Length: 103
Image 1 (cartoon, rainbow, N blue to C red):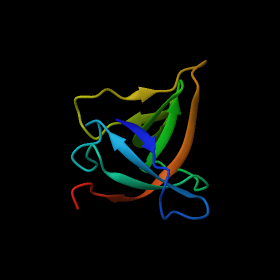
Image 2: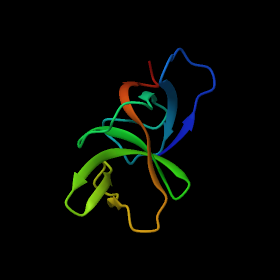
Image 3: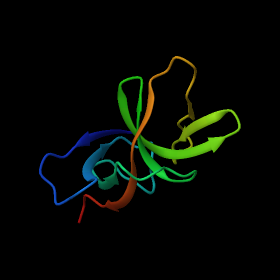
């Protein structure tokens, strides 16, 4: 599931809104949903995050495992993303709220 930043939004301070595309976070997050994100919040294991992995923005569940950080889709048909040495990997924010696109 990838993300696109929304240019006009009501977010303030350390927050921004993104629109998601794809099905990797179904059933909780659907393609087209808006997600309010806080880029200053420290991610904890289990949080839904926006991450930059090798230049691509994704929304995934963040897990801290013994081998390092793992990004997991909620849709089981997608494999985990495991950051390897040499990969570009950064957390760009923690999801605070999902607004369904069909509202």
